[in-house]
Structures are given as structure tokens and as C-alpha cells.
Image (tube, rainbow, N blue to C red):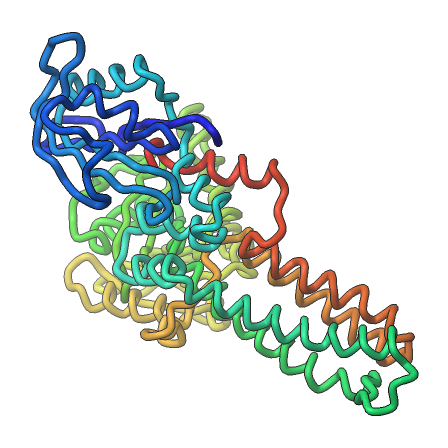
Length: 451
């Protein structure tokens, strides 16, 4: 991290302004000779200056240059940001000039990586930066901001501190058993503290798994035989004519996707090809894909025709989805009933048709009930925001259970202490107190260039 990096921090394309960011010990020194109106090495930190970027007597662009001196910057290094006119050609030219004068092109996420390695942010903060960029709903933004502001990290740090206090007392009793005035830390006295820690950690895990819905949304697959109204339901949910609707069976041959926000949660909806036995090669590929998508879905909406008896294909779909989070939509309920509703008595049923919206609103309400949207806190968004963090929290909790088992089996304190330290370490991995180079490289490669 001794070199100076540069990258374009705004999306490439036509726009009013583009920003090229430079960070490193030579940032000001490299930009200074290209900006001839003012000596940037003498200006105050966190100031903006008007001028031009000039390279070999050629004026590249009219710009505003921001100078921010270490350590009060995002990376804790000297940072210069060049605000130029938007557009691919101008932006790339300024970046090219910087690279020719001593900068290195930044890797994806390298600015945030430097912020982490320099102690400016922890791993939860870092991952929240990307969550903030990628968030698609207001609730997703709030979760990311809580992570970025350190509120989520503080919950983990508090648990680590509580474990550390128990460990400290154990160490005192192991190392100095001769001191009578030190409270004896027996297994029975450890247990209440550990029980509270475990309960707090379990609460974080449960809230975070609910919170995952906020970030990633619910992958929802609509399945059923051809011509039962799957595409019509998709169009009604999206409130647009996304899928082609005809009376001809097999019109939908590939998955059609769309998204809506439901109570602040993203519903990622996929309308699949009608499931039936077919000799058509192309249609068969679509049917196989539909069956495969059921296994990947968070929610399956099974569409049946109210005006027809259940067929063998209907029965096959119902059997395949019986252990899946699912809602059965009996469509076309404006037509005479021929379906055997008794066969569906154990299923979660909604009635719809293509004439009015009552059924669609009922479907939305049932989804909200099924995924307990009402239990997702509206004010507390301090969730662990991804699978890595939640997995580590679960591992930490598993080690706490081992501690409990050891206490129940009257194991010596120094044996109990081993699992307690492992739990403490796993919580540390969440915020980056402990990490491997491979993890850091993999994590920040997922970031966009210039961030």
C-alpha cells in the first residue's frame, strides 16, 4: 500500500460530472503539476479549487479539484478528487494522464480495502458500503446505513466484550488459584453470563435472517400447467404487460422476470414455462428449467385453474412444492368451479381472476403474512447483512453450546475456555478483528471499481 492509486469513481457514460479519485502518499504531488492554477501542496486540507488539467501544454478539461490530507480521509491517506465534465472520453483521458504520471490503476474495492487495512473502518462497515450502493429499497438503504455507521459492529463488539470478561475471570482463577479474595469462577457462576450472551447472539441471528429479506428480496417462482393464468398473475403483480398472454398453450417458453417492492421488501418474481409433458424440444427445455427453479425459490406460487379438474401435472406440481414455502392460487374463480378443493385442504390457498384485483391484493397480503414482514423491526435495522456474517455468528453460537455441554459434563475450566475463545474469535471475524489475506482479497474483489 505504498503506491498511489487512481480510478474513476462515477459510472461511465454521458453525464454532467465525473469524478476521478486519487489516494496515496504521492496523491497531491502527482496531481499538482497537472493543475497549474494553484500549488496544491500549499492549500488547506478539505478545500476545493477551480482550474484546468493540463498535460504537455494541452488543456484536457476544466475541473474542480478537492484536496484532503491524511489522516482525515476515507482511506486515511492523502486523497485528491478531480471533478471533470461527464463523458467517457474526457474522464478516461484524465485517468490516462494520472497513470502516466505515477499512479497505479486501483483494483475493484481498493479504496475501501485501504480504509479497512488502515483501521478507518471494520469489515461490517466495508460490506455496508457495497450494500448501500446496491440497495434497491428504502429498508435496504437503512440496513446499509446502520452497518456503515457502526451500529451493527457495536452489537458484535459488546458481545465480544462480555465473553472477554468471562475469559478474564477464568484466566485469573487458572493462573492465581492461591488468591482467596478473587471470586471463584466456577462453572455454575459462568453459566448465567453465557446464557445471556447466547440469547443475545440468537436474537441477532434471527433478526439478521429476517433482515436478509430486506437486502436480497424474496425469489418468487410462479409455476403451473400451460394456460392457467401464470403470466396474467405476473402482469397484475408487476402492474405492467411484462409477459405475453394468449389462449394458446405453451406461449411462455422461458422464464420472464420482474420485481416489485412489497412493504419495503423486494419481490423478485419469475414466471416460468407451463409444466406439462411435451415432445417439443424447446418447450421441454423450458419445462425442465421451471422444475429446477422450484428448488431454488424462496417462495413458490402454484397456479391452478378453477374451471378444470386437477390433472396429473397439477398433482405432480403440488407434490413437488408441498414442503416448500408456497401459496396455491386457484385462478379464474369467475368461471364455474370444477376443481376439487378438498384435495387442497392442507394448502395455503388464494382465489383470483383476471377481471378484478381483489385476488391479487389478497395474494400480496398472504405473502406478507407468510414471511412475517410485520415482525421485521421498522426502527431497528442493526442486522448482519450477508451470509458470511450470519454464518460466523452461527459458528460462534455453536461454540457457546459446546461450552454449555462442557459445563454440564463438569469439564475443567481450562477445557471450557478453549471453546469460549473460539466463539470470541468467530465474532471477531465478522468485524475483521481477525482475518486472512484470502478473505480480504475475495471480499473486496466484489466491489465496483473506484470504491
